[in-house]
Length: 455
Image (tube, rainbow, N blue to C red; front, top):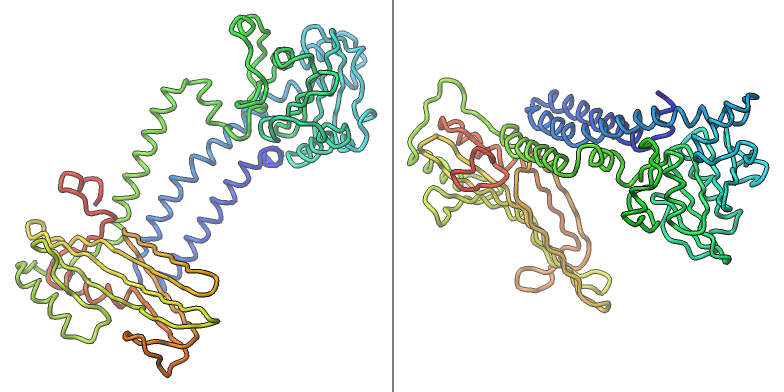
């Protein structure tokens, strides 16, 4: 198992990401539980996180296992070619690695040829083939060691000084001054170097050795006739491009239509969980035994909040049963370092009262504006978002010459604001649930026929 992680960094990264995300959820859930807050938001986030990262982990694990199994005959053949005294065994190993026309007597230890570039290789064989083609295969202890050797080989041979096409993910194709093509590929814990007179010969040689050419490789595709006659080796997922990984492997096995259908179903599940899960996590039900009052009574209770000392204002909207609770928690203009600056922060909650179902549907809106002007020009930044905000605590202090709403300087040399979302939502939730209604936040208040998705 440890070798799988060494050869597949994508698998290790997704596993660490999964463990880190779950640890954060556990920590925040414990803190919220001690504070008496609902743990629904953490459960929703953990589920959504698993939906996103879980398939990535499963795909990378499947690809790592498939690559390990497919690479086993190659590892065994490299070892036999270097150590087995039986000519027949060495001949079979050479044909498996380099093609049916390979001669084990024309292979040698590549570590003795390329020195430091391959000094860390566990096995490395260099084969001279008919028509002047060559193949170099080297195996290392892990992905990073193979990647470093790939870079070192290009530097030692001077190929990095020539104009090449490609990169470390797709392989690098270089044309030498004599017209010979060199294709250098790093895949998993191995490095392969193929040379030939043209791109087609390299593709055929790779296929003869059972290597799959990476998707988007800089090699020219084979003509249709040549593709039907090219020797086909077993598919080798380990040689596929790390940029496509398990997606390309699945598409090659099942076909793009089946893969697109599978991805569409997965995206539907993710979107459904995101909308309905977020609404479930933020919903607050009325206390047991409290009957719902009529809508006129609820409206009166909501508007009565404006008579209290609360940091927001509630006003009616344009539609019946629509209200907006607005907290303009930052609004300042000042000057510092010869620049005039200004900022504005507004948080708004839209409430829609549904008397038929006894539900108050809410959506959060946040807008932020920052601007400055001075010797170096003007800068403006505006951002707006909507959805469900579970918790937010924000504090900021700015220093400089302050101006009032009329543009006149004030005596204060600093301005500070503090925003606590709970101070805004708690009074609203208490009024709504105390009236026997349900508080149901939604990411997006769509039409009635879409409520099966949004709540």
